[in-house]
Each structure stands twice: as structure tokens, then as C-alpha cells.
Image 1 (cartoon, one colour):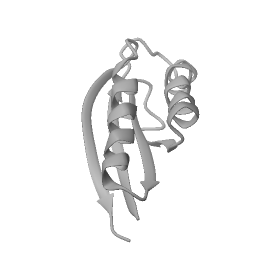
Image 2 (cartoon, one colour; image 1 turned 180 degrees about the vertical axis):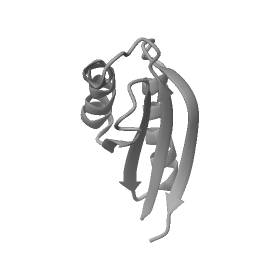
Image 3 (cartoon, helix red, strand yellow; image 1 turned 30 degrees about the vertical axis):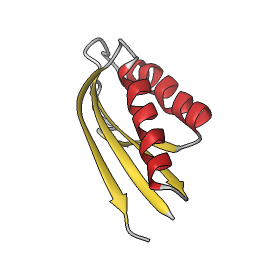
Length: 95
């Protein structure tokens, strides 16, 4: 079994309220869950209007498959013009 986590730091310059940020972040989180069947959540900066940290995780029987899923999720996040990706970080979880 292989498990990995992807953390993505985002900047949404146009957001002036938490409600506006939620409107930008929610389609990314929900879209990743539905499209790639990963666990996804906002994991940091919940009280900041313009910053967000998203976490995505997946589990698979093949390490290559896990890498492919996280690569697809990362490309998906980059496809949103409303946000600027500041940093990405991947970690493998020990079984």
C-alpha cells in the first residue's frame, strides 16, 4: 500500500472576505474530490482572506498510480486562474 499527501499554498489576491475566498477555494476542493477521488480539505490559513493551504491525499496499491493521481490534482489546481500557486509539497506516508 502506498499513500501520499500533496499540500498546495495558494494566494487569491482578489478576495476581500472569507466568503469570497470560500467561493474560490470550494470549486478546487470539491472538483478534486469528485474528479480524482482524493481526500481534500483546506488545511491552513482559514482566517486569512487571501491565503489558503489545501491538502490532498490518496492511497493506492501502486506507487506510480499514486504519483499520477497527485500530478493530475496539481495540474487541476494550477488550471484555476483565480489563484496563484505559491508552493507545493509532497510527502509519502509510512504504512
